[in-house]
Amino acid sequence: MTSTDMVLLGLLIAVLGMVLGAVAGVLVAHHRIQPTAGPSTDMKLARAMAAFSHGIDSPGVADALDEIRRLLAWEGVALVDRYGTCTRYGIDPAVIDDTAVNSGPAARDAVEIHPGLVRMGLTVDDVAVATLFVAHSVVDRALLRTVREVAGFIETQLAAHALGEAKESKTRAQLLALKAQIRPHFIYNALNVIASFTITDPERARTLITEFAGFTRYWYSERGALTSLAEELRAIESYLVLERARYGDRLTVRVEVSPESLSTRIPHLSIQPLIENAVRHGIESGSGRGSVTLTIHDEGALTLIRVEDDGIGMDPDRLRAVLAGQLDGVHVGLRNVDLRLRETFGGAFGLVVDTAPDAGTLITVRVPKFALDPTL
Image 1 (cartoon, one colour):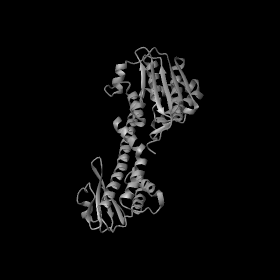
Image 2 (cartoon, rainbow, N blue to C red):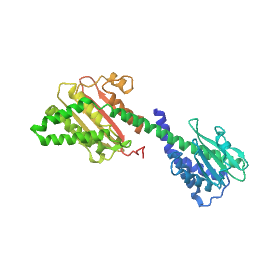
Image 3 (cartoon, rainbow, N blue to C red):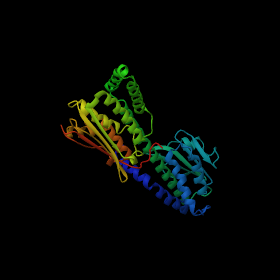
Image 4 (cartoon, rainbow, N blue to C red):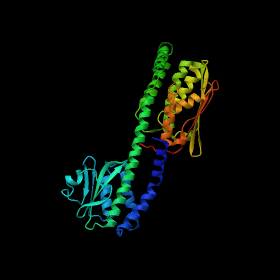
């Protein structure tokens, strides 16, 4: 999904409620219907249409369809999806026969196919997804216009749902790719460290086993698109316990977290890989000694996260190529995190990396303090 798609989706979600409310009133006016429920009729119509934002097969669609029929004083309505599943109210099943449903893609305009029965196809991204049928004793231009507008806004809601599903699917695939990159030698080294304490310090060995189990459980867990910073920090703590047991006093870690930031929602496994990158390039690739600093605090409506190490640093041009997907290498985990941050929160919320050879690395992440989980 491109950043343009993300902007369009954000704009769509932001204005959809206002537009639907306004158009609902227009629909009522176009069809010259006197509202039976007072001034709230247009809002009821808007809410009914909004049910389609959860997909054409969502549980609320049937009730929404009946509500639209009632509010617009249609005598009958039916919706047939691409698989032939039909939801109908007030229309004789015999009227919607095989010829009406299966005579090829429905017209992209509202047309009267039988006396008193209007048919119109619904499409999303030029793909036919359903056919809308409306029954009314008087088929005039006002009715046809109303059917077109209802169909158009149902299509808009279905398109928003499809775009959200595509985004969720892509983000999930990227997360699975990151999980597949867990380094075998990290597991080997962790288990080797645990084994080394089984005789000399059995209690510490048991503690390390618990930390290893907690970390791997979090790494491979099935979660929604977002998790809390508190949960991610627990996994980071387990990871650092294992690494400090391995490196001893060669690894210095400083963590400063403001309590108010713990509830911030972030993509699963978006900070831990940054810590691992800092340890790996701050110690393993350097002199064998190093420090890692993690600081987290709120800045207004944002939470600011910084991961800094004093290791060997990176070549900025090479890093830019990695983040742009032009170069594979040891920093591909950074690209994965960068992509998921941008696709979750928008193009302005990726990684900001300040680094140079032999100058260490500072990675800054800014995320919205309050963000809705797209999987909810």
